[in-house]
Length: 105
Image (cartoon, rainbow, N blue to C red; front, side, top):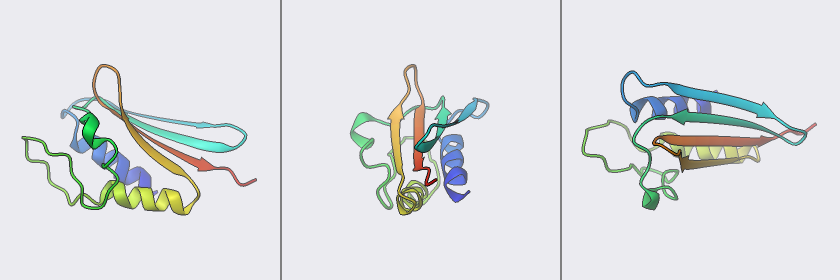
């Protein structure tokens, strides 16, 4: 639950006020996948590998509050459950945050 809250808060924080946030979920035989897709400004390519680091925040001219811990905490929770979390830019603008968790059946 905390991971979903953190990812949604991040998407809302970095997206225009009335833009859509998409949430998708899927299952296959081995894993569950959750994606949060926004239509915000995206993440500069040089920052993509660092957005999950503790206290790291993408520098933006507009003032966006936060501690830089939400994505780091999410990464820790996901990895503690044997999963993976990634960020990438969407074509046309915005960000995709994707979580994959193993299904231990």
